[in-house]
Image 1 (tube, protein in one colour):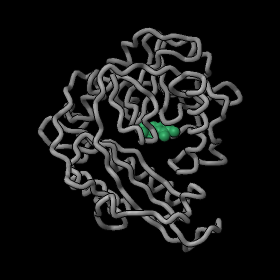
Image 2 (cartoon, helix red, strand yellow; image 1 turned 90 degrees about the vertical axis):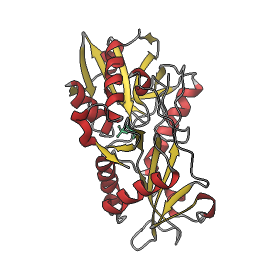
Image 3 (cartoon, helix red, strand yellow; image 1 turned 180 degrees about the vertical axis):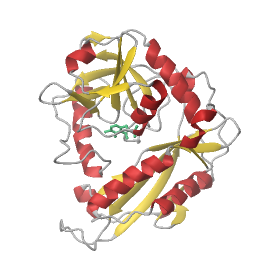
Length: 321
Ligand SMILES: Cc1ncc(COP(=O)(O)O)c(C=O)c1O
């Protein structure tokens, strides 16, 4: 089973059991969608069809932007909530600061909530993007026009999804001392190359391993493994400090440390996690096949309850829409 957002979501990389399905939580009915999809752009909502980007947009040529991948979920009380919105926007702020893009977290928060409300989305993937627009092709971005947009896409729940089959990539992850592990647009070309290679080999997803044999992460998800009942999060300086990863560490008490590929191959269970992937067990890593993962299944179920507001102890992670 699969609870992934729409295919365009950059991090929807690992097919896997839906947290909601694993949690045995039925997806809540979605309200009728807004007549015309709304998108928030530079301070106001607008019909998505009415907006266009200039073909000389700087970010289109150089990847000079920063984005986030966020989820909103329908909650049991009939409403909806965004999961860990401040943490996502703080990470985006850090990326924007590095690029020299002004970023107002309070404004972005309002933009996210306004777009979800305007589109009447409850289960949704939320995509904010801040970027350099048109105004020259120079690499000095000082004074270059900047923009902020937010789009929201209703997410569907798929039944009968499958666990991921994962290949070890020949590509190396962007090293953190060349490109910091933030959600900078250009950095994702690295993920696209690895994903293309994995798919060409008949796999669903790629795992980055560094030159010394240490595991980094998947193309858009972090990695955990389970050995003799003990859950551990893969730690690597080149990996994105995932918000789902941090959430699962807090929920499970998992340790965090560096891991070699051999340790993953020797593990009882391996799973990826991310905002889009949620908790996504691996069926296969190269030639190694894993059985059904009871630990991942239990953690996915707990995560599914937390994101939908069914675990009051974690209500602090939800921003009501
Ligand atoms: C490269 C990469 N690693 C890991 C993750 C998981 O991060 P998070 O749990 O914050 O979505 C993502 C998704 O954003 C990602 O793009």
